[in-house]
Each structure stands twice: as structure tokens, then as C-alpha cells.
Image 1 (tube, rainbow, N blue to C red):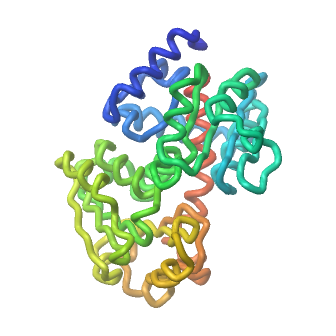
Image 2: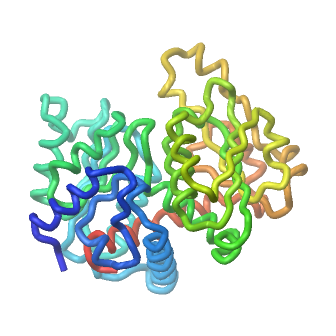
Length: 347
């Protein structure tokens, strides 16, 4: 069932009431017509539902390639920042389910956005939802996607808002962790995860850390390893401290961090977020995951990366069975297929 405008606005208002309002649950109707702005919207039972639907999408793709459940539905992808994986995986997800895609390259070098003429972001989204059933939006300003969604009637999905959040990346990351280590193990044993690299600017780690706290996992040790100038923001750590299942360990020593760890989640130093070339050069290459490091790592430690990588993981690691980042990228399509099917009421 597709939500009417009044119902959609009601759900939208719930999102705006507070960050911790869990409205996406195991009930498929809770997803139907909803925005996805932050991982803090998703209840633990909602994560279980998403995992189940994503697994079914993987089976579907591997058996028949897809189906037509979203035939005659249209996805608008609007990107004010560069994207390869997020943009392409959402487009592939929609097409594998029989839908169509309108793409707007709204960045500085793009030529398909009226933003260059002075149109506001909310007007752009309101116009696009006249043509499309769901919009995926990436924008460089923190909070911009939430603001755009507050004026929209149809579902808006956050594909990254500056250094804020990237919820669908975190959801595919959690799917990958559960898939690589086993769901039962993750929910019943202590899991140690290293977050490595640019933790200050990395919206992927901001979202993932919050999601791990809310995931229903029994105990998670989060080792945060970064240069001193790129540590995890205080507001993220303060959020995590509200959850008894999270233990935070901060270190600058990578070899110390990986000792006894189950997952190494690597991020690049984000050059585009720095005010000067000198500031970037001072920290780039601070940590390199190479063959020598992996020889000292636990035999079952999974290596993940949201990509793109810029030298922080050596290509010689790609053949190591512990390297999961390309499996992680494929999982992204399955999870985004599940999200689109759920918000459009066709899981």
C-alpha cells in the first residue's frame, strides 16, 4: 500500500521530533513511505528485517538476476558530491527490481541541476518528486538531507550529508559484518572492531558506530585508531556512551589495535575536507594496511573499506581471503534493493 500525503507527512514529523525515535521496525508497514535519514531511525528488529530482505535479494539476483516488483516506479538520484558506488548501486538496485532511474548530477562540474540558477535544494527535491516515487540525495552540508526531507511527501534516502551521516553505507557495513562473522556470533559474543583512519570527517564511521550501538549485538569493543588530528568527534562518542553494549578504546598504534580484533574497518583520509594541502599532507599515509601488517593480524580478521581507497590498503591484500571490501560493495546493492523495496511497499 502506498501512503497518502497525510500519512507520509505524519511519519516525516516523527523523524523530526528527535534523533532517537525508532520508527523502522520489523513491521514492513513502518518502512512503507518513510524517509531514511539516519541510522538512529532503525530499531534492532528493523535491522533484522532488513537483513532478511537483503538476503532474499541476494538469492534473487544470483538465481534470476532480479524481478519486476518495482515496474513503473521511478528513482531520482541527486548527487551534489562525487559518487561511484553509492550512485551506481542504487541505480542497479532499482533496475534489478524492474524500476527506472532519473539521475541529476548536481555537483560543481555537473550540468543537469537548476541549482546553478539559484534554485533551493528543497525546491529541487519537491520538483523531482513530481516525476519520481523515491529520491536518493547526497549533499555536502550536514543536515541538508533532513531539511529537504522535511518538505518532501515521498521517501527521501540520505546518501551522505557532508561529514554527517551515510546511513545506507552503515547498513550495508553491518550486513557485511554479520555475513562475514555470522549473525548468531555477532549477537551473542563480544565482537572487536577497529575503526581506522579519518574518523573526524568520515561519515561512514559516524553512522556505523551509532548503528553498532543500536544493533542488538551483545558486546562490541570499538577500537578507534587515527592520527591525533582526526579522532572521532565528541558528539559521536557521547552518543555511544549511552549504550551499555559498547566499549570505546582509543589508540594511535595500529598494530596494537588489530591485536585480537575481528574486523578492521579502514577509511581514507578525506582530502576534500581539509582547508589546505599542507594539512592533508601532514596526515595522509599515516596508516597503511599491507602484507607485512596482515601477517601479524588475527587469521579470521575481516578487512573492510567503504572505498575509494587512496593507498591506505595495498593492492597486494586483495587476494587475501580476509579482504572483504569487494564483497562489501556487492552487499551494498543487495541492501539498497531491500531498502527501495521496503520504502516502496514491495518487499
